[in-house]
Amino acid sequence: MPSRPRPRAPQDGPVVELARRLGALLGELGLSEIEASVGRIRVRLQRGGVQTAAAGPAPTQAIASVEHPVTAGADSASMVTIEAPMVGTFYRASSPTAEPYVSEGDLVKEGQILCIIEAMKLMNEIESKAAGRIVKIFVENAHPVEFGQSLFLIDPTR
Image (tube, rainbow, N blue to C red):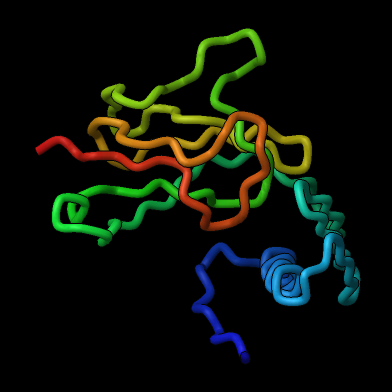
C-alpha cells in the first residue's frame, strides 16, 4: 500500500524528513533497526530508541507538544490529546525518585510540564497546550514512544 505524502512543517529539516521516511519503512517492513545516509546526513533508527548523527551544530533541547481533538464519542469531542512530538523514551518525572509531573485526575494549566521525552540523550519537557483535567495517561513510565503517539487526554476547562 503506497503511503500518502504528509505536509512538511516549516521546522522540518533534512534530518527530520529522513528520520520520518526511515520510521515509516521501519514499521512498514517490520524491521527492528534501519540506517541510511544522504550526503553528509546519517540517520539510524532502532525500535525502542533513536540515534541520529548529522553534520552541523549539535541538537538543542526542545519544548513542544502537539494537540488534536479526539472524536471517539460525543463526550470526547471536546477532549484534547497531547501527542509525542518526537521519538524517544517517556518519563513521568524528572528523576526516578521524584513525584510524577501529573497523574490522572490532576488539573493542569496551559504551559505546565506534563512529562519528559528523552531523545538523543536530551531531556525534552513536554508542556500542556490546554488547561483542564488529565483524563487518561496512555504511556507507562520509561517506555518508548513514537512520533505522534498519544500521551495524555485532557478535558479542557470551559
